[in-house]
Image 1 (tube, protein in one colour):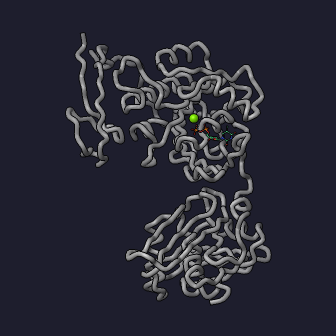
Image 2 (image 1 turned 45 degrees about the horizontal axis):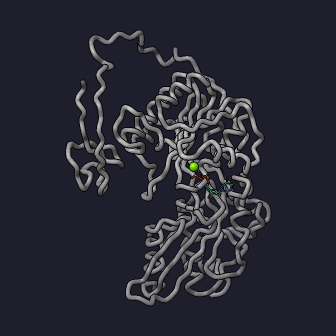
Image 3 (image 1 turned 120 degrees about the vertical axis):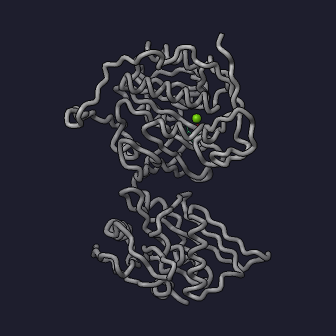
Length: 453
Ligand code: TYD
Ligand code: MG
């Protein structure tokens, strides 16, 4: 009889301890320890002498794997993966509950009509999945197999039997091994379930998509080790109250991590957004103060967005600073620059900023635009609606160069903008009719962009 051990495991970093602790000494998380009971394995994998036919080989002798990627027929999804699904890869798809992960994976699964896809659901019944498929108006296919199961032993046996080309696991937190005593969703269960699907994917060269929930802190529930184990981590994000959804690669062993896919949630499922700039600017109020259009680059794609600011006198002692979709530290920095370098007194004002459409930007190239919106709202003077502002703001109040200027200008020109505020030092690219306004400082940008001051 093997002895049963009990240990306490931090649910955010998998740190183990023999006793309960309020704060994890490894990752500083509070209240993250959960008791987990494990039965040690009786069969040791490394017992006795190791016999293996494995040898080291020169890199030149390694055959080039020209594995063709499988296209999903959803270009936005393929792009984020780096050009399609790589056989044998394990992809974790994370996101808040209700954001549309199951919908996305159902659409992907059904678009791969030539492959046998096994959709394992641990959260919904097969009837619910069927209802969703009907709502999505998916053409029924004999090759799309549904399985409502959470027991990994049963799943392993069924994987052998059905021999699928692609597996979707919805969600990894519901899967459990019956010989582990800890509850599904705990670190040991999630880690073990991931390891089991990894082994299956690698030995059979079958791609596996694992759906994972995100905790309220914004990390994929379960230990970080799961993110380290899988080949690709995709994040599906968006504001619950907006229809736009952005799929982002946080980690990708088979492609770049800065590509995004943009979708819109409609009543018949997710639709790709092929002209995102137009969509995001559709509701802009021309000539309103506190609004500027910026050119952001996501991966290789330019995206025109509206950044808004509202500056209002403080009614309480401490002025509020609040930002949605924009880094709050960056906002503090911009306010300090406007205060110290340009001379605006903002200490008596609340400042709210927002990136329209539920999009999050973290590129410094939108700094100038944000600064213009703030000043525009403060002075109640509109920013020229035909202007796109591009440039990073430095601590000295200077406008600094940004990369990929050509793409940004081309996008602005395509959408009918007439003027572009750009950093003086940037390489110039003429594009059609667009007028380039070179600026060196925030002050200059303000005087050129604001219609009346
Ligand atoms: P779902 O894929 O179940 O989310 P997750 O798996 O990430 O928890 O989708 C949840 C939301 O999407 C739900 O609130 C309803 C909405 N939705 C639509 O608006 N249109 C649709 O066609 C579908 C299937 C869902
Ligand atoms: Mg779901």
